Length: 286
Image (cartoon, rainbow, N blue to C red):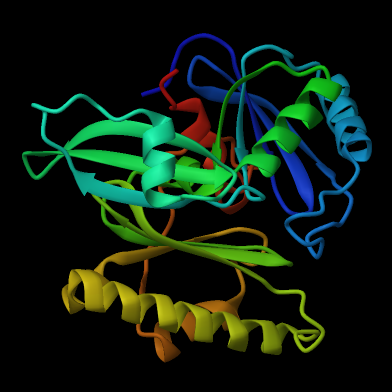
C-alpha cells in the first residue's frame, strides 16, 4: 500500500545518500550524492556530522524535496532482534524493561512491537546502538530535515520486496548485510565490513563474503530446519549485478536467487537494486 500524499524518503548508504520523493504511489523525483568515506571508523568513534549534513542539504536543494516528514533507512544502523512469546494476560513490558532483559549494560535504543505469529502473541524487540541513532538524528537536524521515522535498512528492504520468507543480501562496495526473513520478520541478520587490508581484490571480498554467509545459513538451518534454506534469495546493493557474486551464491552456497519485484513504482531509469529500500519506506505506516 502507498500513501497518497507526498512522501520523501532517504537511504543512508555506506558511501552515498539516496533521495526518492513519492507522490500518489509513484517516484517523481530522485537523486544521490556521495558521502565521505568512514566505514572503517570504530563503532565507538563517529565521524564529523557536518560534511554528511552538507551533502544532504545539497541533495535536497538540488531536487527541491520537502524537508518535513522524511522517512529514513540507514545501512549504518545495525539492529539486534528478539522474538519471544507473550501472554496477553500480562501487561506489555516497557522498552526499558526489554532493554534490561536482553541488552543489559549496553547503550541501545529499543523498539518493541506486539504481533501475532502462528496464532500466538509475540513481542518483537529490536535494538540499535544509542550513539548511532543519536548521530543520525543530529545529522538530519543539521541538514534542516525533519525526520518522521528511522529504521535499519533491512526492515525497509523486507517491506519493499514483499516476500514473507526469504534471504536478503545487501552487498555494497565496503559493507554487506545478510538477513533471514520469516513471516516478514528479520529473525537472523549480520553485517560485515569488506574493507580489511587482506580484502583488496574483488575476489577476496567475495570469498570472505561466502564464508560469512555460509556461517549464517548453517545457523539458520540449525535453528529453523534445513528446509528454511530453500527460500528465495534477493540481492540488492551496489554489487548486486555482479555475475561472480551470483555464481558464488548459487554454485558455491546453493542458494536460489529470485528477481526483484517487477511492479516497482519506479521509471525504467531507476535501478531497483539500488532503490528497493525506498519502496519499503514509502509503504511504511506512520
